[in-house]
Length: 365
Ligand code: NAD
Ligand code: MG
Image (cartoon, rainbow, N blue to C red; front, side, top):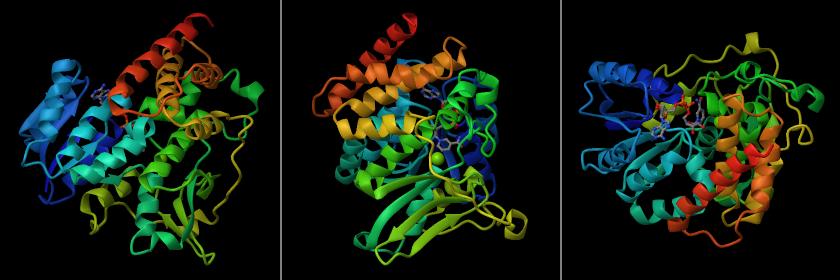
């Protein structure tokens, strides 16, 4: 299989290359791309004998990505770019009929409905890599969707589970980046701390599985052993379990409908002893509710939510705002979101507008 990895120098990108290393030549790396870190990209390109290597930090580079993913010899594109920037290449790959192993969640959040339509029309196929959606995708195999009542997404609760708002007011960037279960890039790690990650995943599930909001549930599961649960109409629940290692989901997406031997080590259930669950504390962590509100408002609201979140998280990482400013800023930008029905050619304009508005709101904090 000929694979292109967009965002190969990041956390998902590196885990994907590890899956390729263990593939014994079954997966061939045709192309690699990154936004920065040219040295790492070059080393990867050399090791995997990648035919195409693109540093995509400017408009020219972004155009080359489109060119790369649509090449006839490409079978699968693993999209591990962080943020809205993944939308254009993901769209191009789907339109060219490619299999898209989609780790990026922001593209689906900004215009999931349109992306799923493009999938239908272009003949491409999205296979979710985000662990919860990958788990649900696995548990749904061989089942009739009309027999499914609910989809359950689990979350560890992040580094601040159990914190009060008073405590959250004082947390540092370093603390926010110290995730208890998963090693990930900085943006998604902060999203996991605010619980916006669960909000983005809620929207992602809405579109990937074409499920109504009332049939999607989020539950905190601190051990991160169960990643997703499908609840059927007869009351049966099928949960997907594995060690919290993204190689499990990446390998399933790349080998689907088959499986790779020893993609990750099996769980030691005796050592784990127990699995715990608790409800989401939406009062202390309002980001999940904000994402659900954006879905309910419809139109460009999720686009605006995502753009405002990307800008706010960036500002937090640069120590320009405090942790609790993140939901405040998102909410403020969302209040002025345009209420129109979604059109693909307007998405980029609305995204840019929401970024500008959020930056202005940061300046006037
Ligand atoms: P990361 O920051 O570690 O890596 C991001 C990669 O994208 C890098 O290679 C970077 O060079 C590239 N990139 C950044 N901006 C770009 C741009 N404008 N254009 C082109 N390339 C760009 O991020 P990550 O943790 O690997 O996450 C990647 C995506 O996968 C995110 O959308 C995240 O939400 C999702 N995801 C990640 C994990 C995880 O465990 N890391 C789990 C589930 C979903
Ligand atoms: Mg996830």
